[in-house]
Length: 155
Image (cartoon, rainbow, N blue to C red; front, side):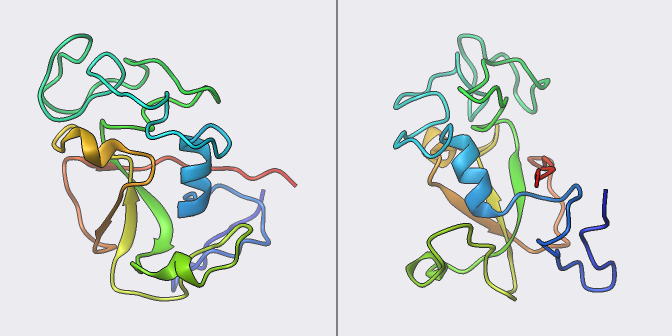
């Protein structure tokens, strides 16, 4: 296991193998169950039986964050890829980055003002839970509806 981040700049060295935040592209690939053309992590429809997003009903009884695993996982066995909390990605936010990025394994812009958030949250409507939906926040920002997941790439 290697240290991926430079602790003075918090830039990731993607050649190293260790725990880190997913890139935005990795996050979306995982949410789409290996890149499938689907609107939500479990298909093309999403209800309160599938995720914790604004409001309650059906299986979603939480006004705020729900316990991990309260809803079914996607085809890769990943929980809460839609709703519950926005998830930090390693990438700096650039609204046109993907118009000029590498096709394979883009790691995001080299700098920026905001970091990328993905997945929607309990405080946002269904449309923000789409696998393609993007949001942003200052990297030192804190909110009750933002969290993270880590990845450990295999080589």
